[in-house]
Length: 52
Picture: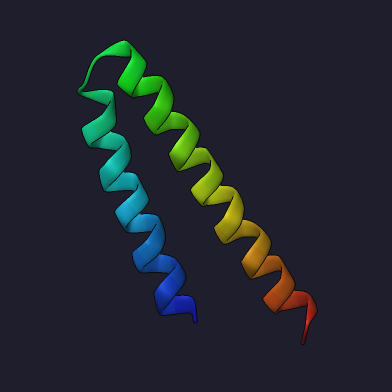
């Protein structure tokens, strides 16, 4: 579970670096995707932690 989270966030970080090298509209779309991805990971982690 923790490994999945770390690989997921690493992938998001790599995607973010790629996105920020692109043009403005792609930056905005990528930022929205990355933000929602982090929100999903955070909420999933919180649910997992509160479940214990």
